[in-house]
Amino acid sequence: MKELRIGFIGVGNMGGALLRGIRTHRPEHTVLAYDVSEEACRRAEAVGAVICGGIGEVVSGSDIVLIAVKPQFFGEVMPQIQQALTERKLVISITPGFDFEWLKGALGENAALTRTIPNMPAMVGEGITLITFGAEVSCEERQDILEIFRCVGRVCEMPERLLDAGMTGSSASPAFTYMYIEAMADGIVALGVPRAQAYELCAQAVLGAAKMVLETGKHPGELKDQVCSPGGMTIQGVKKLEENGFRYGVIAAEEAAWIKSQEMTKK
Image (cartoon, rainbow, N blue to C red; front, top):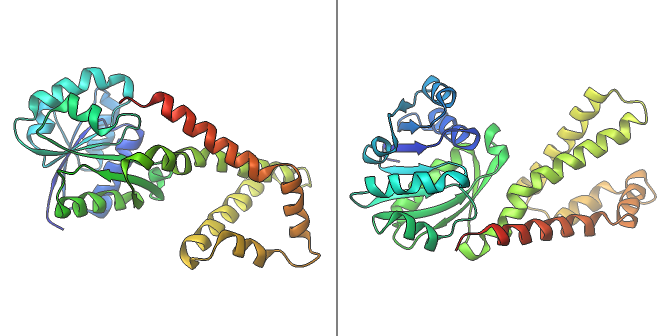
């Protein structure tokens, strides 16, 4: 992979996580950064980023511009990026809710666009980033972008029309999983297990189970069946989950998150 100059506009939680991942796994790349927060800039500089004085400096000095600001700041940030795009340049948005048509209208024809949606576990290098490329992004450029996001976990390429649906599984589901871990921990705390041990035990069980799905390639139902001995304790717990609508509750939560994402999308 060739050396790149990657410019970050915004280095808060998600932008900062991606910046740190790049500096850790792809130190050959030069990373430029700008953020209105002095503290965020100090954190970025501490891991090797070059801090710029403004958005125009980031855009003009980068091969790839990565927009990592909250949606409410797009109205202020986008005109500055558009003004600095005096030639064709790769531009990546990590903010959901703004489709290619909207981004192209805001940034102009010099922006070769990619939309990405990383999720919270990217902050510990175990994220999953949804990626969709604009038609103007070449095959070689796509590989460069995929490698950038592999610095914070796995990547999943999908068409733009499926991004919102995919996001409910990648971005909303960590919250659902935290609730599941908390509920499991509460259950065994009620049986006498100290809370700190309960959180560790349940979190590691979820982490290990997820890893088995990814690494074995087996259907989750098959893995569940392997744990459930006939007449054993686990199948009784599974039965109670089904009786209390566990599966339907999860599906309904995904649907509710998707409906809200449609209401928020700017087209």
